[in-house]
Length: 156
Image (cartoon, rainbow, N blue to C red; front, side, top):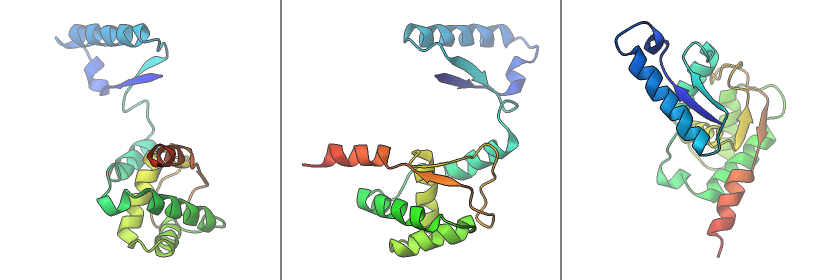
């Protein structure tokens, strides 16, 4: 699937509207030529406010410092999260416990959590459950697939 993101105001009557529609039609044709027929335009009104807030919060974890890029650190953190995610805990206490277990400072644990969510190694509902450190941790699933696939490529 492919999605194009536009502000709702781009579709209001204006001198640029025709040009915007032409560009979108061209983009749709390009995706179709690549075999992708599930193409849609997404606006701020398409996404709910919870999802938008969560994506803005998670975006700060899009890149990691070198010491957090190590695969073994990420896998240990995921294992610890899986262990500590049982029961009702705040997101902060779960991340703190996982960070402590993997000898990572708490702020780095928060970044690592965000990064691993964005990499889909941690799966949770970000569309309807607000991610706040002081709030209850939503149900999550640890998916080792993408990270495990990377480790297999790097293995000698």
